[in-house]
Image 1 (cartoon, helix red, strand yellow):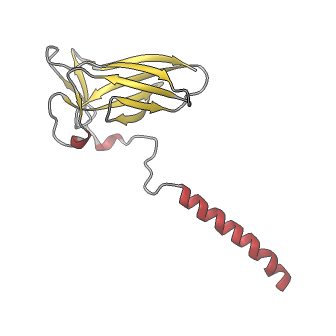
Image 2: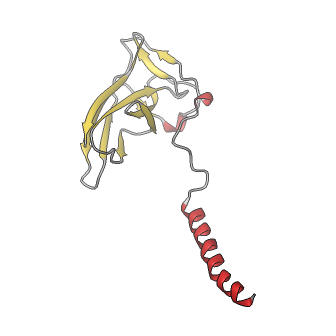
Image 3: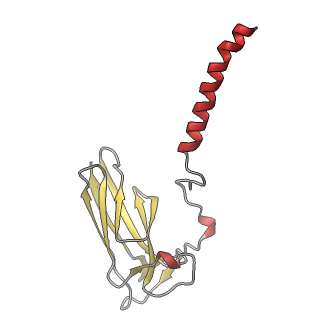
Length: 150
């Protein structure tokens, strides 16, 4: 029996080390990639066309990989300090969609997007109120959409 125990001890130590390394590498409280829609009002917030902000989206290849996105928002201010609070006209955040799937909530006009893989990909940015409602005018979302190819 002692020989078996001596053989099992290194294996058990190795297994424990792998488990500890995995736990240390996984951020605590890491948010899942999906988005839980039941916490926010995702109905559209209709704005008057005369006072509505606009948005444009540009993507530049990052030499280190991925894309550097620039979101220009005349008439709109990114206000991460007010997210999940009362709506204030002209402020909020943006949502980034890649190929129709929400990938990120944006709180600033610049964002680095990791490489997407070979082929054409559709990038879409919507402007959203502090309550997460999508801003719209004339029944259409205030958004910008472009295609990128890797």
